[in-house]
Length: 204
Image (cartoon, rainbow, N blue to C red; front, side, top):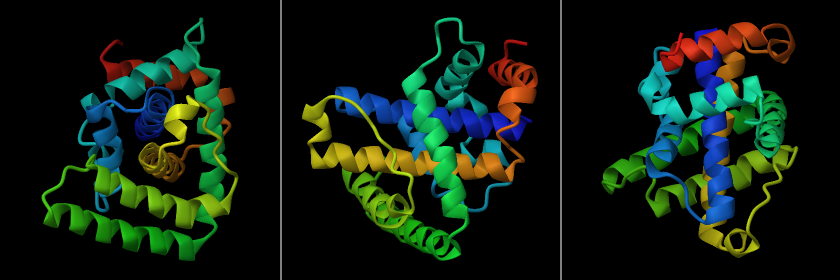
């Protein structure tokens, strides 16, 4: 359950950054960097290692707790995007060629970023990740509809960064599935999920 919760928290953290970029034109640097770094964690030992440590996912764990509890804190738009990404993950996993291409291009982007001594949130790195999403993942469907401020969504750089964050969210969705996550969790294991979320937050 712990790995599944970490993956879901990462998914929501990435989607929150998508919403911030769509509505305000920029994301929060550290939470976004945690999500983007996960795209280059090819040989991590477990879910927590993919994201450095659980403290890096504090925003995502907080959001997951609110989504599970409801009580006025649930974000329906965020839920819609997250569920669409879980559907997209199913399509992605059924396309071995697409998966192989994404992996190969991620390695290239990682090497280019490291070679130029760029942080993972550098505009050029995010632009490359955005192109990767647009060319290999987006055509698989379903399309992820992101609503926000038209002023920002008309800017090519913001669109690229949104796509980069969606790619990171897809990475989390894949990890959730690999950790044994199923849709039944949301109906039959909500209490266990909330308890695991609170434990990871240090609240239990």
